[in-house]
Structures are given as structure tokens and as C-alpha cells.
Image (tube, rainbow, N blue to C red; front, side):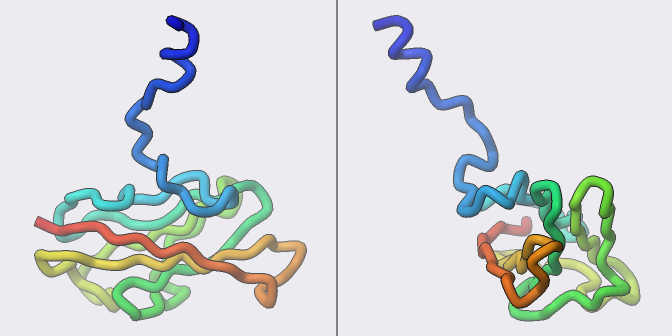
Length: 117
């Protein structure tokens, strides 16, 4: 019984709600409460790339921070950005992603919400 208890225990993983194995981490985690200029984005599985749509606004490529060696795509609100800061309340992120070798025509997406204080 003790072993069964440990194997079924919840660890509090912030990304337990991941909807696709290509998503290794969503930032912020679904339902999180963050500050107005919090960096948002995804850490993708090796071999994937993509872009972000926040509150139905696609983030321009030149405003995304990419680390291709780590398969990460992030956006930080700020002066001169398409989103300068997040208003208080609920916001929605859609990560659109695809396996690089398959091309963008094989894209899929994941959507989640977070809150700003």
C-alpha cells in the first residue's frame, strides 16, 4: 500500500495540464497569477519551433525571444512591444508549434490562460 501511495501521489508539477507532448513547459503555468511584464512562452521538445498568439494578437517575429538550441519561444511585454504590459485580469496564450522537419503545414496549437494582478 505504501508503494501504491507514492506512485499515485501528486507532485505539484506546474505543467501537469500539458496538452501535447511537444510542450515541455508553459510559462506561466495555466491558471497562474503573474505581474504585468512577466515573460511568457513555451519550452518545446527537441526539433520543434513555433510562435505565440496572446489575446488573439500574433506576436511579431522580431519581438519574440528564441533560443533555438533549447527550442524555446518567449515574449516579454515592454515599451515599443505589441503588448507593453498586461492589463489586470485574465489573458490567453496560444502556442502554435510544429516539428521543424515536417514544416509549418504540420502545425498544431495549445491554448491556456493566466491572470495578472
